[in-house]
Length: 429
Ligand code: KE4
Image (cartoon, rainbow, N blue to C red; front, side, top):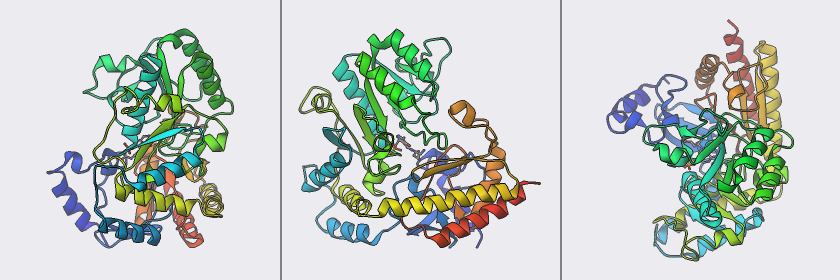
């Protein structure tokens, strides 16, 4: 069906928006070529403006876990929109979603709705700083917590690994309060905290790192974060924007049995509409305005349409058998992709946590940012475009996670595995 219309739209878009997109990863810079413009999506499928159909493993970067345009979500939104779109006043819907979230995440005593994962992480860190009176934070290389200034920081040189800006526009003064460590290095973490704990408010971590592909915590790593933060009164923040309701209904904290002090959520809890949330122990959340002095606000926070989509999505996920079905589909895909690479004679490493996954084009075990970067991004790009040509839409970067939904069928998985074998076989040359 060609990509003529997408190409024409992209040429127009670049004259209107930076890079022609509203979020960088969509521009295909990591894989080359020009992005698809999507017309619609239904179930496990997306359809571009040229009429091409794809089985979708991006799922809007995670939110569409029940499938695109789920009838129950669409129906609920249709009736919600009749009542208006935004009031700037409390609604019963916010109570309903807050109750569902707090029930699923018992580590949270209270929760605040915001509009994105960035806002959730930024606000959780402000709460931790306000609660502890300390300024510094610890993050881990490769973890992404949205684009707030203090989080666009990379490891500086030197023992204390003081952060340096990872983007123009981030003042050095902001970055120096962010200490950065290698993910999965419990010893380095313990050493830094033992030295610097008096000035550190919190540690923020993706319990499974979805922003360098899919990197699992080594046994003992999350436990070490929990032990050392408790010992020194640091706030442990699990950024579960991606892992929340994805790795399990109770997120990575339920999956790994670790109770953080605060949690950030997003993506799935909005069912595809803009929702983020942060929450934690009651004594921390009581610092948040208007209950306490730490200011945080948002015109559209708790928006009735976004709450409706989130509530309906969580209702579907909380039904008996939902995660068993997701797990079965994921197992089929994992076995199929591993077998396809083996039969095609291409060395890959596959990782997954629940139904987020990544195939790395490397022979190195991927345990952190450094080892993830051993992946052959050229080979990945050829794989990406080959899969697209075979009607399979995967993330346009080696360093992003893939996702499945309740709408993915055994037939979808079969088609995907066959396409993967065909494309991987072509990579051998
Ligand atoms: P948003 O501000 O994009 O809603 O959430 C930021 C964020 C925070 N924490 C984690 C763990 C995240 O994965 C994200 C956003 N994830 C990316 C995917 N790598 C969103 C895609 C994009 O940036 O367009």
